[in-house]
Length: 439
View 1 (cartoon, one colour):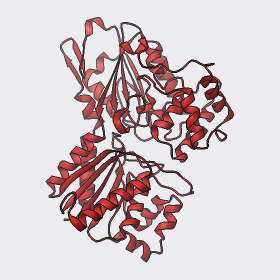
View 2 (cartoon, rainbow, N blue to C red; view 1 turned 90 degrees about the horizontal axis):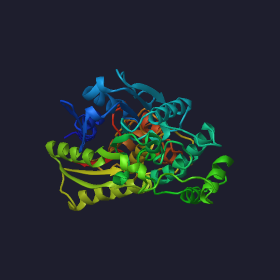
View 3 (cartoon, helix red, strand yellow; view 1 turned 180 degrees about the horizontal axis):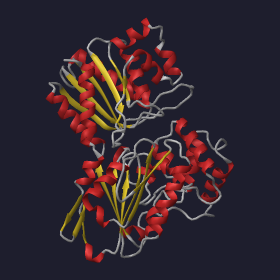
View 4 (cartoon, one colour; view 1 turned 135 degrees about the vertical axis):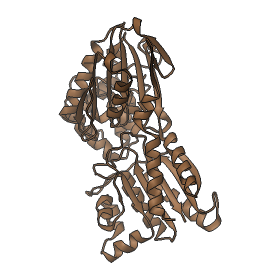
């Protein structure tokens, strides 16, 4: 067995199973004059126009699947995706924009999506395609705010260690498109959203900041989150003013559960982390490993999560509990990093480096940690692989792993020591996959 090679093969099987193209393709069927979208059925004679809008790292393959199913029926369409993740489409315009920090291209894209939604009517169908990354890709500053305000706030949140739920609760209350506001803009058109989940628990209000879902969070929640992470005095003054004004009831809240606008909206999860982990387990078993999925809902700090997986791996090697060797231990989710250094990296590269330090070159154990979208943080790597030789080679090259970890510089550590996991854009995004392979 070659553990690093097997680990990468297992990871790629997870990505393939979570294919955004295949997930959307399986959700749309055109039979004669009937259009089926998941469990919905539409008589095309009763639909005046069909619009396709969306955003996220997987938006392009999702849109391609819609075009392949109903292309000539599309009246107009536009999607926004991350730079380098777009692909040519025939009926739907593609705008590439900044992620994880929003930029002017994203602002233009958000305006175009809102314009299409607002231009739809009661006899129309709006197909909305959402995947991870849409929160940053759709900046639409509320009155009194600027794109710079959104950018600065996003930068602070990304480095704070806040969970994705907390980050999005803030961003929804600074936006004209998030938190159910895209659904409100499209009303009374019928909206069918197909969603690739990058959120633990598949919370519709959190994925992509829930542009077509009811928002249970409030302005007061957003203020509390900024205070929790010491950001209330750091974010732009216009941001905290808006949130406090909203908390005092001076501004209209985002659409809440039970509001009439959502009677015309249906949201469907078409792919998620669980589907990726199940495929990874199947591949591991096909390669001869005893495979176990610990959880698809891993959150909290990256270093704590890495410590947990490492301790389970050591337990398996020592006692055969909870699975006998050869073993593949799988986890999924979205742990967070609090950035204090000035290095370059991402949460999965940091996970792999922390694991390497905890395992201390333990013979026969390999750890892989990767983002299913193919990009981990602001790098060209999906994550990293660490095996017993990683730290040994690093020491030979004079690399101090602990120093790199403290400086949040995991990318440069693995670039020099070897182990970067590079896949390129994968066309999907269902959070992270982490595994330990025991020979």
